[in-house]
Length: 120
Image (cartoon, rainbow, N blue to C red; front, side):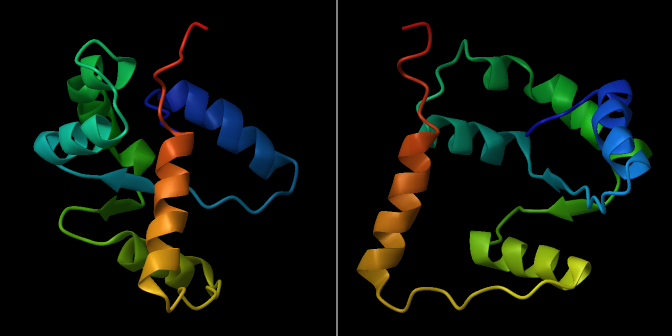
């Protein structure tokens, strides 16, 4: 989830923490070029919210309130997941060994994020 407002971040994360939940907040960062590539992969058009808000979000997310910054540039999903697991003391299940199964799983996740039918 992308939250770029410190007020909203505190409203959500702060409320959970005040109720005793252990919340880890990570900000995944990448270059504008990389973000545009990722948005294109999920078929977000040039007028989508994500594309229109790149500069605003990048400026906001680099601030200290959003710290626990993870640079995702040139890193695989597995590498990022492992770093988060290491930082939080979690252990990950081993990745699927079959490349076709890994591809199908990743494709399934990507398809869930396509927003072609927005408004229908």
